[in-house]
Length: 306
Image (cartoon, rainbow, N blue to C red; front, side, top):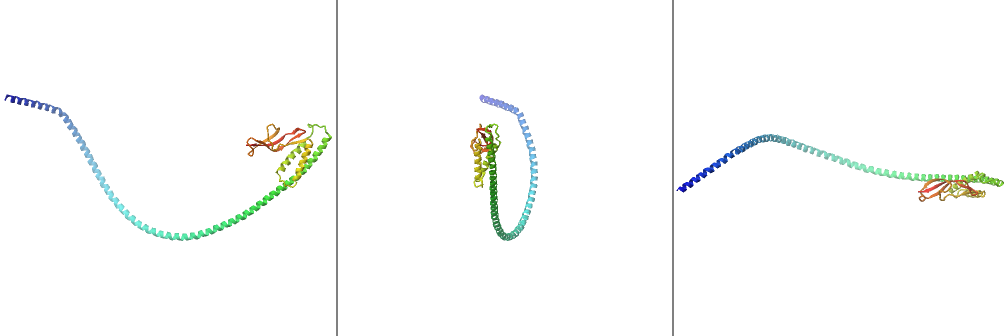
């Protein structure tokens, strides 16, 4: 019995001690609970204010939606009215288009008929113009060809006449030169002791220049030119007479030029020669020797290959 009472006391004491411990823990947590409740209260206030703002926004949106619905109703009415107007205008326009199409088709048919006639007229006029133009061109071409032939004939005849006249003059000149050379030869025979330095070579040099000029003209003339053979014979005769008096014409035409020549040279480029090749193409003044000594230096033109 005592043991039971003792155990009961011990259990009671343990319960009392546990209760006191729990109370002490609760007292310690009360400030934290208060703070938590305060924070929750503040959050609730914030939520209330936010909810109030949301309610105001919703009210405004409802008003905007109401206004928008009214605008939509008005717009639908306007669209419906426009639709009816469009249908009416479309019907009227379709009627007008049919009228215009019918009228246009009729005009096009008339225009096509007129164009066909005009096209035929234009084709006929074009063919006639081409035929007339061809005929005129043929006649003008024939006339021009005839005129060209006449002009060429006149030019050829004039050239032939000039060449023949030139041959006549050169023949007379050669006769005069031959006479002067004979007189000079007779004079030289009467004075055989005159040295080559003191001798007068002016006539010989003039004869040499004239021989070169005549030979150049002869090379350009046609072989059928009247009097040409006679002139060739006269030139050959005067050259023989020239040589008999101790004079020599040095032949240079067509020969290759070299820097050692005692000449006065003019150089002209030529595409007909090899690059660097130099050929004497013209004698302006001939080189004249008297008894083996040069008394006149040549003046020449040299073609240089490019």
